[in-house]
Image 1 (cartoon, helix red, strand yellow):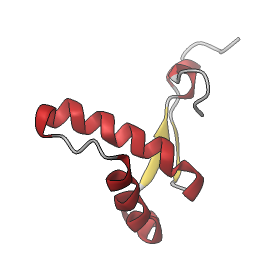
Image 2 (cartoon, helix red, strand yellow; image 1 turned 180 degrees about the horizontal axis):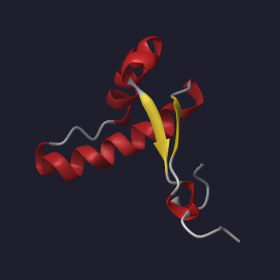
Image 3 (cartoon, rainbow, N blue to C red; image 1 turned 180 degrees about the vertical axis):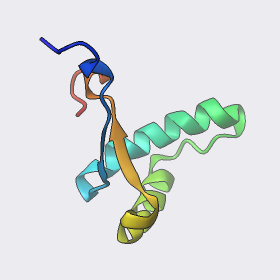
Image 4 (cartoon, rainbow, N blue to C red; image 1 turned 90 degrees about the horizontal axis):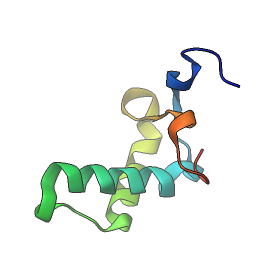
Length: 75
């Protein structure tokens, strides 16, 4: 059982190649929320964008999660 406040604990770490598919899905969802009908919903677009960020991950791109709130199969 999680201790009080632990369910809201955030894990921040550099993004890895094995994260790309999952993070691209999040990026697509954020795009739909932000831009509605004008959103870019092509996963490959978001994956390519994230792949470009990996070499400079220490400067601009981190992976975050609230593991306790992820649906089954994530995290």
